[in-house]
Image (cartoon, rainbow, N blue to C red; front, side):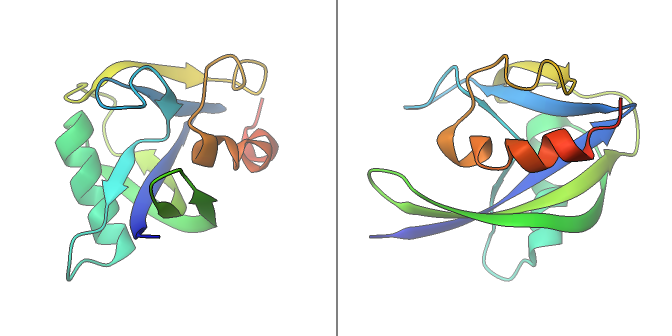
Length: 130
């Protein structure tokens, strides 16, 4: 099975976590942490900065690695490096997503998460400060 290696930004601000709703593909309408594929020659942190600029027209500061999630989808194996991040500026523009939301500990499970992203929700609930 093919392995795809990606990065995800766990953006936290004021006790809330930023999530985006996919606007394309087989998983359209499902929610995820923004990010994407690591390009050849990039380290995960560089890939995450690039992906967030492309997807959200935003700059981030990449912090510590929260967790690397491994998940088997029907057609591929996903290896997702999840980093705690913060926005450098307040503005974001959705270039690829249908919607975005700042979720709290109480609302984090109110959206339909992609299976791999759902795998780290318990850690996120612990990290969200109310």
